[in-house]
Image 1 (cartoon, rainbow, N blue to C red):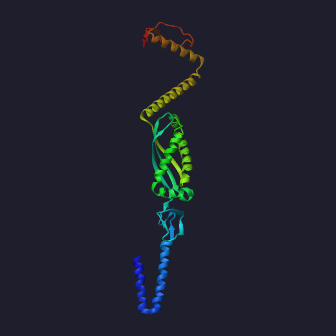
Image 2 (cartoon, rainbow, N blue to C red; image 1 turned 180 degrees about the vertical axis):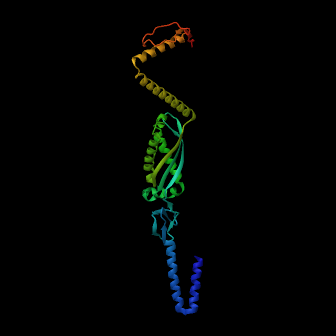
Length: 290
C-alpha cells in the first residue's frame, strides 16, 4: 500500500511540473479515483471460491456475523473481516472406535470410514456462531465423537452372535449411515457413505466363535453325508437290503472273535441254491476281535 501511495505522489508531482496547475489537479483527481477503486476492490468486494463458504467476523469484537456462499460479496471495510473459508469439497474421515460394548458386556474395537461434505449454510442460526469456529479446526473430532455414540447406541442392543450372522455387516453400515446423517445434518455435515472395516473381538471370544463355527460345519457335513446315504439306500431293492443285513451280521460276529467258514462257492442267501462240493480251497477264515 505504501508503494502505491508513493507512486501516486510521484505521478502527481511529475504532472504538476510538466503540465502546470491544471495537469496537477487532473492527475491528482485521477489518482484519487484509482486509489478508491483499488481500495474498494481490495477491502469492500470479496470473492469466495467454489467449494467453499466464507466466514465473516466483526473486525473489532471478533463476533461472528454471517456465512457467505461462493461468489462475490460486498463487505464494510474496517468493520467486517473475512476469515479463512470453510472447504465444502467431499472428504473422507478414517476412524477407530475403541471399547464399544455389545450386549453381554463384551467390548469391541471397530474400524470405520465416513465420507461427507460440509455445508455451513444449512446450520441453524443459533448454532452458527459456535460451529463457525469449530468446523475449520475440529471437524474430525466432532464427527468421531458422534460416530462413537452411534456405534454404542446400535451395538449395545446386539449380541455377538447377531454381529456374526450373514449380512450383519451391511445392515450395521446402513443403520450407522442413517443415524449419522440425521445427527450430523444440523452441524453442517452431508453424509454420503459409512463403511465399517474390521470388528475386533476379545481373543477368548474370537476363539470360542471359531470353535463353534468349526462344530457347526462338522455337523453340517455329517448331516449332508447322512442325507446322501439315505438317498442311496432308498434306491436299494429288497435283495440288496438282505445282503446288507447279512454283511452287518457277519461284521458283528467278527467283532466278537467268531471264526467263520467261507467256501469258494458261497453266495448270499437271496441267491439261487447251488450244489455244495468239497474243495481243497475251503479253509477257515477268522475275523479277529477288534
